[in-house]
Image 1 (cartoon, rainbow, N blue to C red):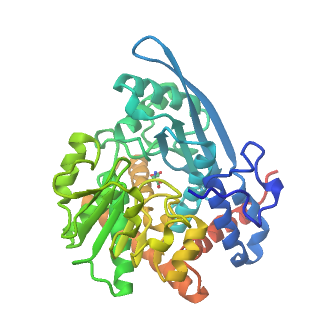
Image 2 (image 1 turned 90 degrees about the vertical axis):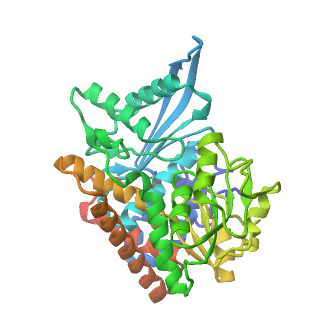
Length: 436
Ligand code: GLU
């Protein structure tokens, strides 16, 4: 995997001293993307450094008593990248490879995503460096509650609203909501989104990210003249995003011809049975050993599979200069955050591959999080049809605006999305002015 060091145009002093300057990781990718949009920002470029420095970074120690009586400590983060347009908003990731650089980059992408689809939030992200699968349910609950209590000093329904991300789900959100509410002395359902329906969660939230990928995928495919019926789709990551997007594509007549997860890669040229694969994953935890497919042992072969649409829906920095030239898809829908490095972006652009960037393609999740937050504040809940209709409309409009700008300015959809988003954020910054 190529790991960017300081991007060429970023002066050294802009890199926070608390990051490793020789290996910036995902934050380096984010900075490079900001550099690429800067020439398009006109007079607002004067404010651009605000996007290169997170507003607030909180690192917390999360100690728990394990079931065997020993004490374990975990490293937790909450980064509020920007709050110019509203409270911080973004998920919480539980994964063994979480780093500060990663959480910072994810928080920056939340700022851009929320502005790109015009929901009234800044950007934030959190995480704990832990493999949640190694914890018992009791340990997971204790860790989640202690983490919530530690970051409780900076989150709140009007300050910063966490949500699920990789390794977290509606149960974790329920524990977070309860812990925050206990500390406050009253129920604060608007402090997190992605909650269970019985606790003020929204219908459609669980499926929203995958549904959004599907909606923008259909729009982009029709612009390319690509029929969804019969289109061959490959998906990396088969969790809440990739699994649901795959099901919706299959329901629309597409063939899911390859799936890769953390353990294995399975292929079937006539199309996988998505429901059966989902049942296999629920039973075994992975696509490995699925009877209805052939398994490929060399993971890197996934990228060269013959297909029309590629959906990276796992982790960041997966599509790199090393594998980009092998990709045969005409259309890439970024279900994951930050799956493509800037070098790979250039290679794919030269090959004529269309990329719908993460900040649009996976914005369905935070869009329905916004609907959930609005419903919680008004204590009035909408039907699933209404939520899906509003989600579809908002995603289509966001993609159409970005598409038009990309044609006008002759730039990629990513650069166009960053132009729209960064302009909104920096206009807000300029109008608010600097305090004091
Ligand atoms: N974790 C999701 C994302 O990366 C959702 C964030 C949210 O709903 O706040 O967009």
